[in-house]
Length: 129
Image (cartoon, rainbow, N blue to C red; front, side):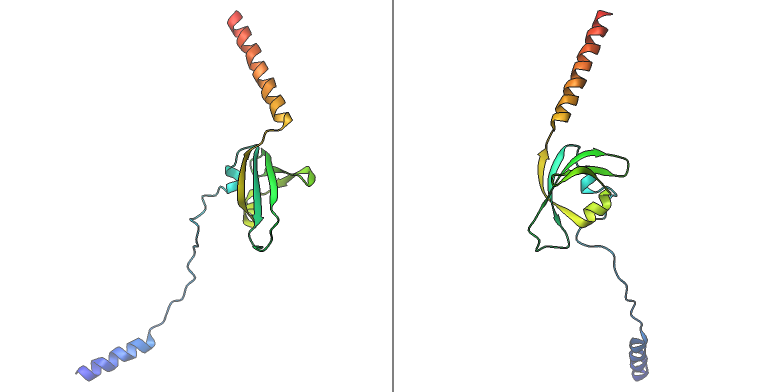
């Protein structure tokens, strides 16, 4: 009886099919849908490096000027006009190399002062009533 069972086991081993599948995943945790670019505040300056060109030593300098529902508006010093970018495509091409912090422009300061002065005048009229 044992020889038959051994033969049967060997036969089963020969006929087993291996199920090869590509497993999804990688080094990074699954995406939450928000990119590193979308998480940065307006006024943020940063350096980027191309993901697929590790030997490239030039870095890109960008500043976030504004955000819309689906796009981020960037300033890049060599280009005078603002760049309207898809944040997902941008983050697929570039990785953040260094965060340079927030940089406010003269326009930002003027807008801040205007808002502060408007707030002061509103406070004074409210206190007079």
